[in-house]
Amino acid sequence: MDKNIKGPVVGVLGGMGPMAAAVFMCRLIALTPVRHDEEHIPAILWNDPRIPDRRLAYFHNGKDPMPWITHAIGHMQNAGAKVIAIPCNTVHLWYDQIVANSPIPVLHIVQAVIDDLHRKGIYSGRIGLMGTALTLQLGLYQGFLQAQGYTCIVLNDEQVHEHCSEPIRLVKLNRVEEAYQPAAVGVSLLKELGADAVILGCTELPIAVPHHRRSELGVPVIDSIDALALATLDWYQKQEKPQ
Amino acid sequence: MDKNIKGPVVGVLGGMGPMAAAVFMCRLIALTPVRHDEEHIPAILWNDPRIPDRRLAYFHNGKDPMPWITHAIGHMQNAGAKVIAIPCNTVHLWYDQIVANSPIPVLHIVQAVIDDLHRKGIYSGRIGLMGTALTLQLGLYQGFLQAQGYTCIVLNDEQVHEHCSEPIRLVKLNRVEEAYQPAAVGVSLLKELGADAVILGCTELPIAVPHHRRSELGVPVIDSIDALALATLDWYQKQEKPQ
Image (tube, rainbow over all chains, first blue to last red; front, side, top):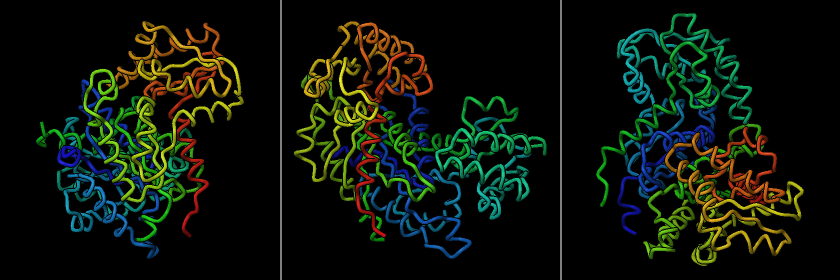
């Protein structure tokens, strides 16, 4: 039984929202090349939608999500996790605090997205950003991208409400099919503003804009769920496996 | 932080295969009626593809999966799980042993499927069975269904290989689109043999036969992933929630 806790296990902190985390698990598996089940990545998903709302915590002095996050990471570490992936962009606004409280490394979703831009051969240019109002306002992506030489394009507040917040809300309500239209218009607006690629920088957005409809958009989209899954896979492939 | 471990949490034992368990998480969320994230079911998924192969354990005296299962359930209980759902039909051949070693209740996937037949108004008749060769040979479903007054229809060994084992294998290899055709032919063969409904009694099969293509089949299919998700939701709705 030792192997059960000795091998590299990935801990996934989900619940923000829960569907994004479940889809992350699907994509992590779908993107892992295997010959049989046993080659898949052992992973634990802590999918706890009770983690206090990140926006309320920031703007309205709501309950602090940090103790819940630390608690979840601690449990996953006890269960054998050696790294943490968090398929929620907004919570990365607290990344430094999370890392400071985590006994194991935490992948950064923005770094994963930048790696994915590079993977797709996009090393410079104008990058359209979609995400929650909070991540866009606080510039979660902008600093990292500008430091790498990219120019950022964002929608105005009203457009963010209509083309980011609204599809995110619909995905969270399980009304996924209704979420496509407003999100796709958001991508188009960014394209018209000159974007060479558009980052779906909230993990509900890649669910709103499913893979099979992306070729309709006429601009490459960078999927923060897939980018984090590929970063997780990269991490896993570098670990020593018990024989 | 007490609520984090006091409220009802669902433990999901996955890895057999991992994609089936991840899709189970998606379906559990999609089938839960919510007004916002926080109403979703807190759940932990232990997705460990290293759990020894159930078929090898049975037929070839391979490694025993039971210690891995007991270990996983113990960890999930420590993390707050109050019930276990296992989105793998084959491992339910060990259900009595799992329950005997589990400190918390374990939902039974076959009971969940029978409840789903009832939910769909199917109280009698001929039920076609699809699943792994092991579950069909050892009659995981047959005893339960016959005790409820249903008649079971199964394919012959060669057909099971071609229309059950093969699509299951393709799903496990992430070759999901190729899995539809052989699985759909299996459903059709059972329909021709007189089935009033067909049970997709291996959790890879509902992935092979996606929801949007089921109306093409001309016979109701009972999806063991969705049935277990609905049983989990029923369990959750009956639990007291901390205020």
